[in-house]
Length: 506
Length: 54
Image (cartoon, rainbow over all chains, first blue to last red):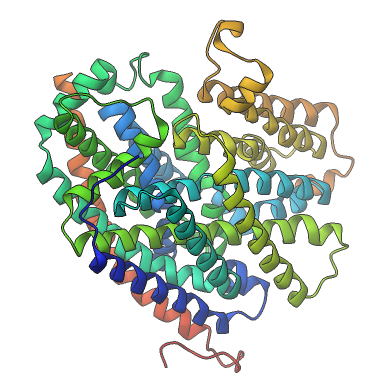
């Protein structure tokens, strides 16, 4: 891929200074860390706006911007339904406190810790293990997206140079996450939120000026036809995909996905939790819609400049469309600021995720297996070691794995290994007194079926459209696995009830 | 298609406006909360902690 860009040494300077400044602040926060609660949930002392800023700072990252823009590019205006559904569901969670308020009331630091309170230590270990596997696989494509972003935005066309930049980025983020924990995550997320949100708004102004609304309509009509406007059209997204997105981009991403739930656990009280989700619904809606608007502008721009010849089938190219577009329309200086904001947001997402998966592995898998007698110092050491190991794995995976689907769909399927089972265990565990440990085991293990949504796995098992008679889409696999997990949770609970009814009354 | 295009144009305008308001409110409110968090972390029962805002 060859890209032309306005990115100059001025922009490189801005990016370098900004990133180093962010890392310095993260390292400085190390002095505030004294125990595991400080490290993971900032001592549970976050108030409303800091909670919202840090939640959105993590959830509106470079990765979100890239995959949402890709969906706008490959799905047309109809892709905007994802943001609408996500915002509406998050708002409902804020109003009702569904799942998140009981979790905050339980006083847990992680979701598997709730499993132990409600079911058994074994469920906690299995849940933590599946969660970590899904989460780390989910992160597996982040570096690739970051690499494509840097390539397309800066015009660095040498793949070796991109790998070096990625290695530097992952090293920096691993360093300050290891040292600073949640306090550094909160501070840097706040900075990232401010820079990225205003950067996105400025980008929108430039993007809309570069194309026109009519240009977008013409491009969508030409490339996608009617399915590019109507999300219910079966040639495009269709009803199944809408339901799947309502579940994944809406309910799961705000109420079950651990990096979001950690913010609920870190909130000062349940009122703050409800306010956090009600306000964040705007963020959960716009984090899709604004990048998708930029993706639509990129579609219109390249449609016009290539005389209508735009392909939406090459996943790497469609992922690169947004940064390539920004690299061509933004002026010197502005591109550096926006690039710095995006890359800082990339690091912001990584720090939250690294912290989350490493703390789950330590607190919910390794520490309980080791007998639960470790000191704070030992647990902190183990969490920091795991962050380093996960960072190395991510680098290897992002170079090796062949991407054969839109990034949003990869993220949804890899995450589904965890959340299909976790959704059933959480909902029934919180709201159904008769749910049992055996039901929870079955529901969690059922989540592994979500792996069937990955094209390389389908190819490996010969699950082709010709053989099955239908296409095994991400939505079918995800919704099917979720339904089966809930059925197994109920059946397992009824057939194998827990022998200690007083536990269920808690 | 014309009806859908108008609908999505409305969604985009509302989103841009809402996101602008959110960005301004959270930037100001978040700054105040962050200062409070750092002061909280330098409370007397943790005398070995330092405050970023001192």
